[in-house]
Image (cartoon, rainbow, N blue to C red; front, side, top):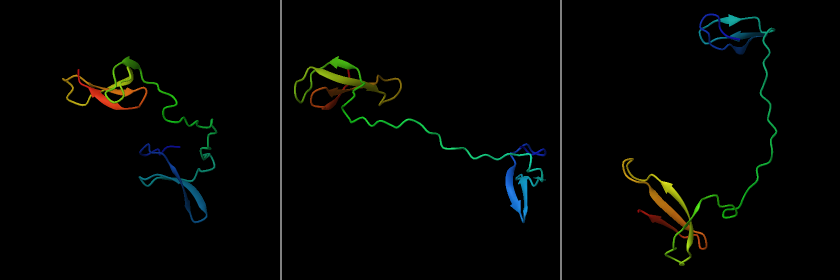
Length: 105
């Protein structure tokens, strides 16, 4: 229910043995019997599955040589690390050893 004076939501309040709905502007309503106050229940959902790091790689792959182990395939992603008028930085991660490096070209 909403306050007829200011339009704010009326909150349940107890004054002595009386239950009423009150507003922050000072309005009080004794018509609490009309209002039904419900607490939101806990939603039951599916359990969250934990996936170990490295078990699922969703990044795209490209042909790039790892400077650490020499492997020819790496995952990559782009990040805007500088001003918006400059190109983004390409990060690469070796598929084999997990070494990460930057490619500024």
